[in-house]
Length: 279
Length: 333
Image (cartoon, rainbow over all chains, first blue to last red; front, side, top):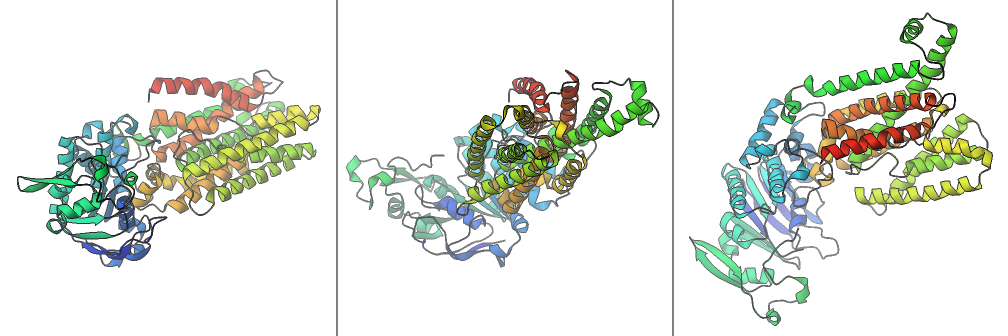
């Protein structure tokens, strides 16, 4: 199943309408959404999931506009890994993974043994099946992040929308999770992920969408977009590049504080360090 | 027992705690029928239940104690259910049925009715109206310019509750001294005002029929509104349903017994510590455990220093606070 943006304009309160996006996320593709803090990456992802109305244009899931889908039916095809989560209310890891089956069950139906097996398998793939009975509140940030991904893996949607998949994860688990998303794409699903790490995008995505703070955007195949000058304009940060194993690697070029010649607005609106979404 | 088994073992093992709680409720009602200013032996109880025994016992059990025990059971059940619902609605395990100021509105209306010197039935009726008015005010204010979040609803409710609290204090301060004991009993919660048990029992049964099918959906909602929406839950209608059901249940309970404290906060919380957080189990379990707790508390309230009666809210607090603290201490969660 494909996800199509038809002249989609994301509604960000207090900002001029963004540039209309017209792009198609084909099955098997891995899209990375890049942009500085506050450019609207999360808002775009929520709009793609139908959680927010678009300012203009529409999202098309399969053959029909997303707004015309019944919510439960759409949730059988669209999965979203959230960046923020609400864990005040108690639940175990397994119970949390099992909510991924919710769109597939009727009101009176309970989760079957097959659903539980799916959840266990998902937890196992994320290396946290041994935590199945643990309350969420006792997990570390990285373990909690992997529970969120396991929930969507249990849901098994055609289209994955992932907000910062590597949040809280150490290097090893970053690679594991990106490999898992890669595997999902190779088995015919589509992945759209917001990333704050350019190098992850360069390594794992085949298409990129850049969101600028002024509402403009550009998108296309990775190699067309991953141009140093474009990225420097995106983050208003001078970059150094190198190539390792055929993959470009980008590092911030740290210069004297007054040198932000690329900045068109006040320097206080962006951090000069490594682009990083504090969460 | 593992949650995996709980999630998959069908209806047997998973819902066994409900059988135990139902048994507990039955025992609570039987104890409540036997104990009081005149206590019955088990033999006398049995005789009265099968239609023999003295006419005094007959009147005592069937006409005085049974309606009151059933009213206490229904009230406790509604309070615990309303607490469980509010906790999911606000995604806050510390919410109780009164957290949104509903009991304050009911109390102010009831005290005004008492000051006006009307009868018990009118006091109850005005408590019901006060509860609904408070519910509507909180919801309208929290709704504001479109979006309401659990945090905003909670804040509005808490501020309203303190407003009602001030009015209650004012009313107590200006009331004639001879009316104060009745007012204080009402504020602490007192089953002596309870009329027919059928309204609360019917509402309890009705809420069960409406809410139990929602159990799995509530589990999803507990993980947050956006997460639930992403999994296909129609969040806004569901939250409206929860809010209305919890408000109606609380209004019925407050109307029957005044504002009995602690049941709505403690019962769902204690059950979650023992049984986990699955709403499909917690909602019916809250109903049964809340009913049993308030029935026993009312039995104690009217027999501890009989013939003098205590407000039942004192007993629920005296039983509830230490057992809650004990469970919380042991859970280390």
